[in-house]
Length: 115
Length: 113
Figure 1 (cartoon, rainbow over the protein chains, first blue to last red):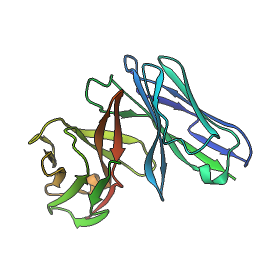
Figure 2: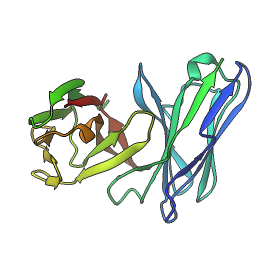
Figure 3: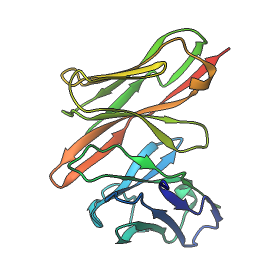
Figure 4: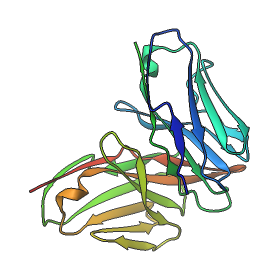
């Protein structure tokens, strides 16, 4: 069974450009998490969904960030406009539903560099 | 706000030695997870601890959970170089509509020959 699949793996863009990161969940999982990892701040939860519904987006840095889950198996994280301080590795993770324990399965990450 | 603190943050040890990594958290929870991350790689689940007194072992690693003390430990026995990685604990913070994981800062382990 395929794991969590993220794309792109690497992206270099210029400040002000729009960035879209994509994530495909593990089949049968219905919770989706977006994390950001930097040296300075470690792993930060940006947003998570249960059954396609956003539950907690308090970690989303500001209005430039948005996340969607158009169907049960796919999610996007968009940054518009991007800034150099957004440079980080963005991880997507999925898990079984909230009534079961929260063992997360992580994708390989999308390394974003904003120049 | 839930705080998860790991100690130490950096650990350099000799092969064959034993050591323990500590994970303290600030609010009630009975679900704790340990992950491993190799440089430039993703996070890999190591242990899922779901109750007070839970103990799990895999190879040279053993994890335990004391929910009353709000403490988990990851014990390394007779370390080998392959264990060099960053280890994260994560605590499940249950909310009305679900739950979320809060991660510690990570412990960067280097095992020297």
